Image (cartoon, rainbow, N blue to C red):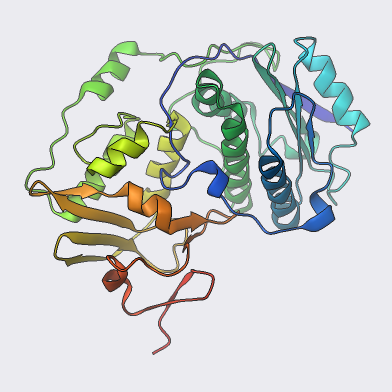
Length: 353
């Protein structure tokens, strides 16, 4: 099968962490159960993934195949040998793309010994997973997870990013990174340094910018948060966050790609309502804009703070990045969804009344 190989050489550097939309941990991402359809899509020779993680990737493979006709596979090795040759040979031997009607194959290869990652892309997907996208994934998404020793989380998070890119492509959107990626040099065989800023002074300015919440209403707090995400401010102790959120984020990995995704996603959504009752508030978006989950806030020390901790336990996302409640809205925020109908799976709908 004809293919174009995109090489990603990783010099893994340290970064902070969290989930793709800073709401759910990676293990909580959902996909349809597919039985044997997803069998054999994960070849974990490095013994990197737990069984539940392998199953999650297999389920996302099925979602990519069903919704986007993409045959996505993952191979992990711990050899430190010629990754290019390994990836090329495996792509052919495993007939990656054979399960796709259009021969659309995608192979993610991770070598834990050499700390290198490679993506093999079939010719039919070159316009979707471009060199720019792959460089962006490696520089802004994968590297922090390797640096933090959470490679399995990184694979799951990158899988979600791959799904998101497929959705954009189906909608006719070309990949346009928020910041121009470092040049990969001549062709696909170039290497890229990971975790370094092209403008350290600008990065420092973003990280040290003062953030104030005194006097802000709930919507202004959310807007300030989205601005921080657009500026890739991964500090876990921003004044915007509730105490429980600060405690939670200290244990999460937040990547530049994730923050870019938050800012880009919510920029497309329309605020439907801001509801306040006592010391609780909710900023919600139009019910048909399923990629934009509502934001919960609580009043602490006289100021409104984002309550991402409660959101993390209450909200889930399916394989199409559509949000739903884990069950029904928690009692403290249920008032904000009066007038919506929540189905038995937790998905919101406009009331039929």
